[in-house]
Length: 325
Image (cartoon, rainbow, N blue to C red):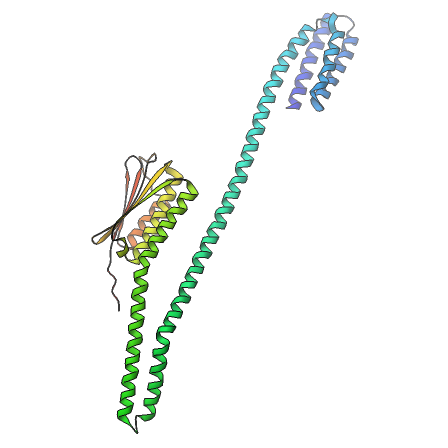
């Protein structure tokens, strides 16, 4: 901006100098004053505007040469200076705000990355702890039965020729021990399977809590029917589609509220995510919706999208009964 103003100064003084040369005698004296005038303007722009006082003093030497023209030109110059200064101040504010937003965005991305790493590590630790618990439980359940059965079979091997009846009894005892161990393992597996839906429902509620905390979106959760009866395979679709649908609501819908409804119907599970956003007249499926549809299709289900005062994304999943070997 200072360079532009300096060129404007030079243009004004040159114009006034040409006017004085054509109108008045003694132009050499006017030229000296104009040179000092320009030097004072350079100081005012380069150092401090207070040096403009020198220019006011120099105007007194130009009184015989109609300095009103010069004053009118500098009145326009002052208006231009105020406008450019205001614009430069606004530009600095915008630049500062843009820098602040970029820093906040980087911090937000860094926080998101750290949070995802933390959640991933937490999930990994949970899986490792679950494996350790399963291993310990299998050891506790089968350890005694297998050890006792092994000892009885070894003893029966030694007695099978000399005391066949006693060897037969030992083998029957070993078989009984093994049957007891298998029954205990089956009971433990049934118990683990019974705990899965409750754990998955807690995982869904934790997922909704994270979305509420991160986005400020009001999310309502409605549960209908025996949700605990839903098989584990369907929960992978429910969790994945809920996560993707809420992400789309936050990014594109401009909504303030969303409702997640999970219903366990006879032979079917129904998941619906609706919002009060702007909706979409022409729905174009990107990777998000396509991924949700593919996820549902893998379990024999389907995906329905409605635009009714906001967007409604419905996932229908048939329930498949699990059978134990």
